[in-house]
Image (tube, rainbow over all chains, first blue to last red; front, top):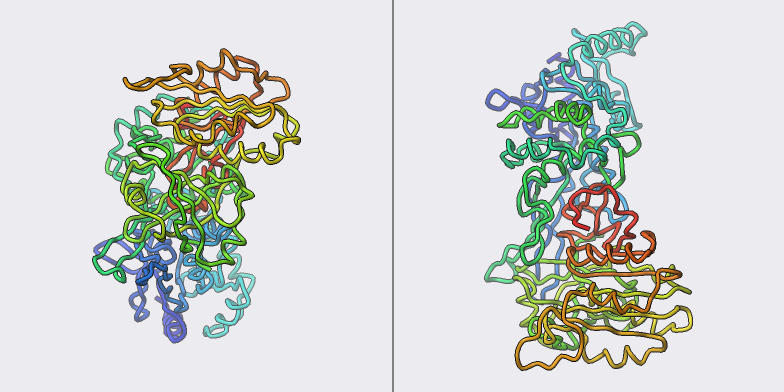
Length: 336
Length: 277
């Protein structure tokens, strides 16, 4: 951590809840930054994506009063600043915006997003499972940030993406960037791009997928798959939710909750009288892969605005206990 | 504004349809909410009971009914079990209406064929009522309805009235007839009624709702009789937790049954996974 950035983080903490990558048992998580030392910007990826800050894994939606009227559970409106988010995760948030901020805006998500400031990092730490470049989502974010930082070695380059970002950069110590700084950034990014070991060829992938719905690949992978749903839980763009009630003897303690759900789970598509449209694991795996590689994020055929649901963060590959690799699946489906 | 917040509605009437199915007449406690509630035929609402849960149910009342609305519910699980025990005066939560309904506009000037199985007649009743109240705007109407047994038929007390609608045919069938029942109609699956169907493929539109396996054979039977794929509409059942395109449960490939359906044009369902149609 360069010292002047530490002071900047301290400054930010006066006005914001600052969350950023910090170490946890040999890995990294997005956690509260209480002092600049908590922040570890050298990270590759985190266990969970920052989605959890806007769409908590579980929360109460509403409670009920004695007459059965529902009362919306309050949303914490403290201003949140995410420090050091990489391009893949930022693109994940932009995709979730398309899902939750449209015809029926999901107020809880939208309010949290509107109360957030994004300080992104151009990603120079390409990991073993990363493939954002091939998905068009990194390693440098194009949009969606208030400030974009690039680690130039002995100093950070800060670029403002919004008026608020511009205001905040004025709190930073330093001098105006020079052409050489921008050139160094460009050089570092092109060096980083050489480090990618995985990629997905997205050209025509949506259509190829559609033609291969009955491929024997799904049965083969389904037999291997454990349906543990860790891939879904660690995905920055998986948005499926379960909504269920918790009954309590006292009506005032009865609540309706929302929590993450996963298409890999058997009950996910079950309807009344035990009907289930995705009873076997192969069909459920095809759903996950299809949504990520073919169907786009928001109920629209093919990539939305050229953007696939998958942002290439590589978490699903990291967590899979049976080594199912989405980049390999994409290759196999193209070959079949 | 929290789109998940249900409005409270009161049950103003309960009508027994069969052993396990009842029609609930509901009215919002808020006059404003009731006044502004407009649902197209085939749309659904999310009904909930605090502490028990929430589920989607089709509306079964005519869309022009404005002082209250109906939903016809079969007792199959927790929530519907509780609803089954609810009487007049009970209060429940309602959100909606949601989804895309039946093509009642497109159907104008065309012969209307309605094919329903079991509780699948409930979301089609608003179509029948729409044709009835705007009779001159539609061609002939033919209703083919199949139930498990004569005792499982729903809206049975309305059949005489439906038959009286000008230029309308109603044909019934059941899977089986338990002893003690007299049954003057056909026995067998609903597609068996196609043999005596009056509606021809030309200038007609078909709307079907029932178990997906039934609709599979209905669609095939209609295609074999030269009905056009673009003029066959099906209403699909999927798990739904939100009704608003958030929760992801009702996805059929790229489509969301709650937003893009539940009523789909058959020709729009080509190349989708997890369908038995």
